[in-house]
Image (cartoon, rainbow, N blue to C red; front, side, top):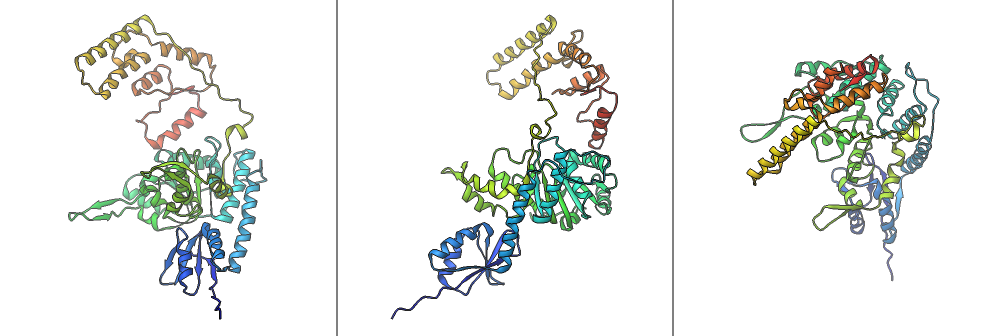
Length: 473
């Protein structure tokens, strides 16, 4: 007599964590071994169920079928999957929009692609709670994010950004949506405590300030130091915006770990360049935008990273799978695609011939450097490079070397350029702070260097943009 083996059904339903699924079944040794073959699985002892990454469902179904198990998807999950596919399809369509009909409560005239971007952000947050806006630099990501807030009922917003950009956000709010109450977190602990408790709709803070501070006691134990930012780390935010989201690209950093733990209803990442070199960086950023979308970090590494014998990443695989997963959840437009009225950028290298006096000074410095090298054969590379820096200073202006009476060829060329520009704005960059001060003083230009306090920099830039000053150094 042959006894048929009855396999228990594996019932799959929602799990409390986003992008994870719960799997329940009566205990069966083969079923347990089947689940254990799914990367990222976890046994929940108290509730007595298994959880798997949502991306592992297909692999589970395939292996279950081979072993004679039925995977039963709950009705609720089936409906959600169908709705999710429909919502993703809608977002893909919205990404193709060139314009959208929006009534923005601002005097600023939005460009068509910006209106389309705002509509995409609205749909993304409503349907999936998070998205990444990766428009090219200069296309108005901040304006689109502020428009999203102004059109919504969102009340508590935390904007995290590099310290130098905090005041730019405040300036942008005052420029486009002055009705949006906002506060920049800055200053002493007492001042910051008031700022966090201000009740402003938008609170703007630097990444570095949100990180827990730890102190080691005399016994060697580490303790979290009480700071005003502790309130922010436990508060429930409606929306957390990460500007320059590439700050989260390294999942090992305290910044990435802290930001991802923030309690929030919606997540919005802003980045002009979300990925530079490594695919793992994209995973870390998307893990803030949509936690769990690309699965756990170790599983992502296992499935998509090619490593050498030492564990170093030397390549990637399954890139199309990643592209398909994230496609509905980010929007990226380039300047050449949406600002067609702008002419292409022109890059010109202008070669200048130094005067005889400058050449004599240059050759004299070069001989001094060669003499130093000859006299010190063990001189380190760093010392030689420091000496060579004097040659660079010589080609800018002899005054950088405290040499008077030698006119600068570059300063003369800049004077000609300013005259030829016929009043158009000119921005000059230089490596040397002293040279920047000399140029700004000589041409009555505005000076932006490290001595200008961060809070005053947006005002200085606005003065250059809107005022009569032709030159910013």
